[in-house]
Image 1 (spheres, rainbow, N blue to C red):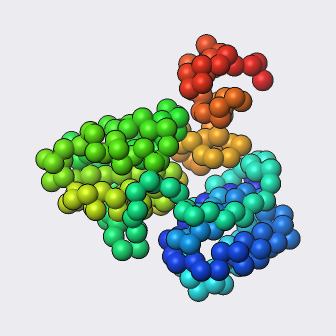
Image 2: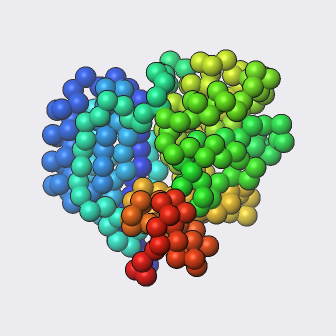
Length: 273
C-alpha cells in the first residue's frame, strides 16, 4: 500500500550570504505545497528534514535546487503513514550543527565511503569505529563494534577525542558515522585538523546505508533514531514499531525501559501513554 507521506533529509555546506531571503522564500513555498518540517539556513550551509505528500516534497526539493548553490543537493527519503512533523519551520542559525570547534568541511573532510566500502572498512578489527551521535540515539542501535562516546551533545565530541584517543591512534584508520552524514562532515574535518591521518565516513550516513545495503549483508544492529514523531526507523526505512520517547526529556526508550516504565536519561517514571 502506498504511504501517504514521504520524508526527505538533506544538507549542504556552502557559503550562504542571503539567509533571510531564503528563509522567507522557502517557508512560503513549503506552506503552499503542504510540506512541514525544519530547514536550518546558516552562513555555512543548510540542514533539513521535511515531510509531506510526495508531490509537495519533490516540488520543494526542485525549488531549492533552482539556486545554483544547491543544484547538486543530495537527499535521503523514507516513508510514513502519518505526517511526522507538526509545523513548517525555516530557521536562521549561526551553524548547521554546532561542534564547538571551528572547522571547514569544504576545505578538508574525511574520505567518503559507499555502503560496500564501509562494510569492508569496519570489518577490519584494527579500524577505530566512532559513532558521532548522542548517547540517547546510540541506545536504539549502532554498527557492530562501534565506540559510543556517550556524548550528550555533538559539542562534547572534540573533548572526548582529546581524552580518549592517543597519538598512536592518529596513525590508525578511523571510521565515523552519523544519521544523515552532516555530523561526519564536521567531525572528520576536526579529526584531520588534529593530525589523524586516515579518516573515513559513511557517505549519506545510516539512512543511505539502509537504502543501499541489503539487510542480510548489513553490519547494523538495532534501529536508527530520527528527529521526528516516528522516533526511529528500521533497516527497511519503515518506522520502528516499538520506538518511544520520554515525554519529559525526549530521549529514546528501549524495550527494557518500557518494561520497567522508567526513563534512565531523566530518571522519571513513564506514564502509560
